[in-house]
Each structure stands twice: as C-alpha cells, then as structure tokens.
Amino acid sequence: MQRNTFGLEWTPELDEPLRNNLGQFTAVEIIPENFFQNRFKSFLDLLRTTQVPVSVHGVLLSLGSAEPLKEEHLLKVLEVMEGLNVTSFSEHLSMTEVSGVEFDALTPLPWTKAQLAVVGDKIQKIQDTLDVPFLFENVANRFVIPDGDFDEPGFINALLEKTGCGLLLDVTNVYTNSVNFGFDAHSWLDEIPASSIHTIHLAGGHHDPDGFLMDSHDNQVSEEVWDLYQYTMNRCQGVMTIIERTGNLPNMEILVEELKRAEILCSPFEKTLSIKKIEARV
Ligand SMILES: [Fe+2]
Image (cartoon, rainbow, N blue to C red; front, side):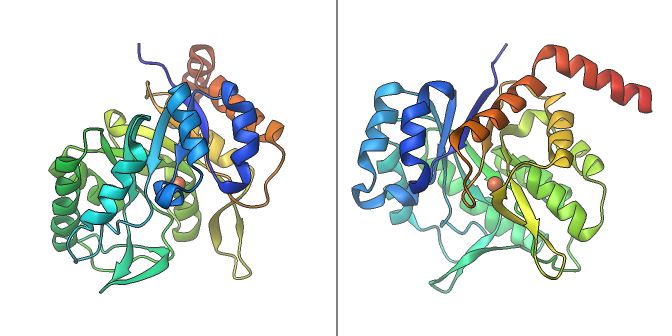
C-alpha cells in the first residue's frame, strides 16, 4: 500500500523553521520561481541531501493563456528540480499572463471546449518535457465566466481525460468556491475520480470586507475544510498533503499540529469511523 505523506510549503519566512524541523515532515512543497538565479540555494541543497519527497508547484506558466508555452521558463524550473526527489510538478488551472503582461492573480478560465484545447495542448507540451508526473490545481475563483460548455468538475474531468495528467486538489479552494458561489462541496468532490488525486492543498482564509471568502493562506484550516479533507481521503491512498501558510504565520508547533491532525484523519481507524458516520447519515 502506498503511504500518504505530509508537509508544508516553503516560503522565505519559513526557511529557518523548516530546516530545523525537516525531520518531522515526509514531504515539502517549493515554488520553483523562488529559487531562480540560485536564490535560497542552501535550502535546495538540504533537500538534495535529505531526498525528502518534493512537490514542485509553479506559479507563472499561465496554463490558460493563448500564447505558446514559455519554454525558457520551464527549463529554469527543470534546473531547480535537478537532484531533488521530485514527486510532481504542478501549475494552476488559470491564467496569469496576457500578451506578455504578467499579473499577480490567478484569473479563472472559461469552462469551454476552446479553452480545454488551449490548456490541453500546453499540458501535453509540458508533459513531453518532464520526466515526473504533471498535475494541475483547481483555483479559488474570484468570478465565474458564464455560458461555458462544462461546469467546473466537468472541465477538470475532461482535461484529466484529454491529457492523462493528475490533479492537485486544493480542498480549501473547493470549500471557498462552494461558499462564494453556493454549491455543495461534497457533491463537487464526488465527481472527481480518486485515482486522479496525487496531492492535496489545505489552507485557511478569511472574509474580505464584502463578505467574499478569500483563499488567503493566512489562517488555520477551518473545521469545514477538515471535514471535506477527511471525506476526500476516505477514498484516496498514496496522496501528498501540503498545508499552505504564507501570511500571519504562527509558530512552527501550530503548523506541525495541523499536519499531525491531517495524518490522524488519514489513519485506517479514523477512516473507518468516518465512513461509518457517513453511512449512518445516509
Ligand atoms: Fe493551493
């Protein structure tokens, strides 16, 4: 049976605490763009020495843009990956660039057949270059573009089928969208095949002044997200769980506690209990 792994996303602020506690984690996530031009090389060297499993999570390839794949950028990502125990390379199912102008927001895509072709071609090119699995991540949608050919799970499933790649399932993003757009997160998750889920993101957010729930990574994971996480892990195995915490950082003990909670929820005993609870509700 493939084992589940658990870890944190590296940020410059967590550099020292992560080094000092690396033995407590069975996984780490890095954003490769942070390490371009040899920045933070000593942390990469530590990952190379320890061979801890690493999720490499890109932020600037802009899968949804109509422009050709940024091959030079991808080569830089490959340089960062060299010598690491990389389990996957992932990117967001969104757009971060139009006509060469980069913006600091994960812009949602239209869920159309035309957009599916654009993203699918880009993912296929990425897969041709990589020798590790490629995953795309569902994002927190600031808005939804109307008149698509699919709903969101339908678009994700069509893309999984077209490319054969995997999914980085951000459970917090599913919950956030369910709150902001009023759908049932459990039903959304039911539509995603368990075999496609390689990695899971968990994070905590807050409401903005308009009452919109933001995926801001600056809070502890909420009870509702823990519930959805357990619901997902009841049918998954061999998944890497990463907690994303980039703002309002607590001390490392609190983050380690959250990871321990994830680990406990995935234990066979807790899984059995939770499945029985769900069956009792039906
Ligand atoms: Fe995420």
